[in-house]
Image (cartoon, rainbow, N blue to C red):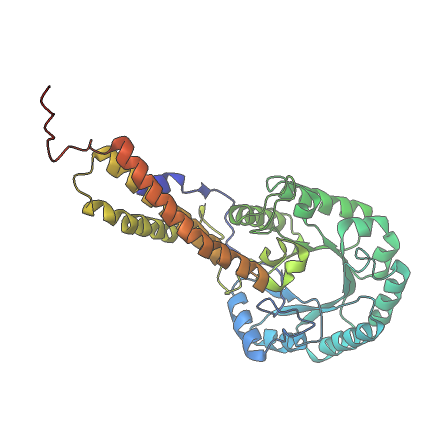
Amino acid sequence: HAAIWGGLREERQAADFNGMLPSVSYAPFEGSGHPDVDNIPSAEKIRADLKKLAPLTRAIRLYSSTGGVELVPPIAAEFGLKVTVGAWIDKNTERNEREIAAALELAKRNSNVIGIVVGNETIYRGEQKVDDLIELIQRVKKQTTVPVTTGEIWNIWRDYPQLASAVDFIAAHILPYWENFTDKQAVDQAMYIYGHLREIFPGKRVVIAEFGWPSAGYNLKNANPGPFEQASVLRNFVTRADAIGMDYNIVEAIDQPWKFFEGGVGPYWGILNASREPKFSWTGPIVDQDYWKVAIIALLVGVLLSLPIFRMVRPTIPQAIVLAAAANGVGAWFATVFAYWNTHYFVFGSAFALTLGLILLVPLVLIAMARIEEIATIAFGRTPTRLIATALPAPA
């Protein structure tokens, strides 16, 4: 069983990255509560997060300026981090005004603010018309000295050149996962789109304001999320981007379990997990850092369930092998379930369903093992011997 785990251990190669990221998207939330409802960050939590991020990046990008996010820029300054603040724009006019006022105030009071992003994929989501968003951008530009833009997927910039004319720089989102590219095609696609935007808008500063790959969730046809895929895509991207002097921002800093409304991949775009621990190394072979922990759990459970074999009276070698294989199979199943639970985030409903399923499966597993023992005894056990010879009746 140990040899099987050793043989199946996956290892991949990718470009080494020894530098610092220029920017990462940061949302100071944790857990599954939505920020609009009950997920308000504290200064202590933000400070702990930024202490983790400071060795990894030179700047962070925010998406709103209220609801506790306004605490971020002054705390970021303590760690020498630059900040691009965001004003969240949707159909709620009153909220939009609060966001714009708060973003302008943050830019005014914090010298580490290097830009304002008015709206995030607002056109793509259909929550503002292009002309209306341009009007908001122009209002903000008149009231600040820092560069102002909006964040949109790359084809919105291509299709609405008037939007590019209204901003100080283009903040394009290039997310090959959502465009059904494989992880092996993702970096080439990003480089192509970056070059394409520079050709369309010569002389305009182009920033890849979002690039990333999810570490878990469902596959989108050709696009497969996963920890190995995320590590290889990001490492290959940042090394190529740095080589050509690209301005970019990685989405995102920390997994966001509350983003379950974005589908199965929504919570898994972070380079740190929700426990604020790195998901992968930026240098060396790409490996599952918890692989051997899972393997040890599988082996221990397998050994534990194999102990009853020693209580059997004179089992045959094939009989013991079948029972040991079944026990270690259960161990591998248990370890796999544990690994899934440990690397995924659950809302109450999905956590309840998984827990109930496990509870119901335990007696089924025990029943199956009992049946396997019976089959092994019949197929491979020793032939029963008669203990008392029965005398045949004498012939008449």
